[in-house]
Image (tube, rainbow, N blue to C red):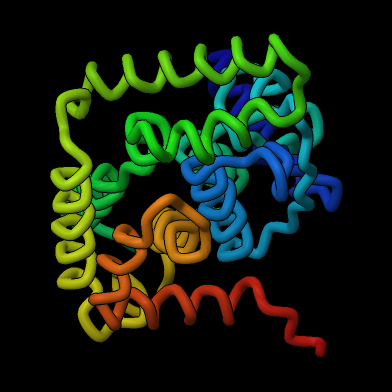
Amino acid sequence: MCACMFLTSTAAEPWPETATLYQPLKEDQILLSDCASSLAVQAYLRMCNLPVRVACRANAEYMSPSGKIPFIQVGNQVVSELGPIVQFTKAKGHSLSDGLDDVQRAEMKAYMELLHTLYIQWCDDATAAEISRPRYSSPYSWPLSNILAYQKQYEVRRKMNAIGWGGKTLEQVYEDVSQCCQALSQRLGTQPFFFNKQPTELDALVFGHLFTILTTRLTSTELAERIKSYSNLLSFCRRIEQAYFEDKSS
């Protein structure tokens, strides 16, 4: 009964103009996976025609009740990560995937689980040393900066071990990325979106990850080059960028 009352109350409240998405500092701190996740949420909300302003905070990760970023604050509700945000907007009557059947929903979920960006930024030693640890710790003074950066790296590597990625070489990760891109490219084909003419949360998630990899400086361009070999994925990213992120008033 309580859950039903909560959903009814949530659905009854209109989406406020003051809705805010919180993420780490864009220029100096945010890392590849967090940037990809934040961009995916922004794309999803724009596809739903739900306004949200972006607020960058050095302590965004610690502001989030779940410790996950990005998170949105809508009225007195705080929700983190794309999946829960999708469910939250659905409770308010905004959904991009209501038109999918059960088979398509299962297929969409399977494709969404293909995307991994955490490995590169923390498990590759060169990337961790040259980019991830310095950026992650940039808002803090020494020795706290070192403590937090190595603590984060340890947490991510433990997570990668738990899902079977801990023993992978960098070349194996690149090959996994290629296979993921190939599967996505085949699913997209010549369609404007992954499920024909209307975007879903899968489109938002794929755009967030691919666009971020294509536009983020890493120690190697190998990831971006793998994506660039799929022309329809590049066109897809450009199409989403033009439709939802470019200012049409200029």
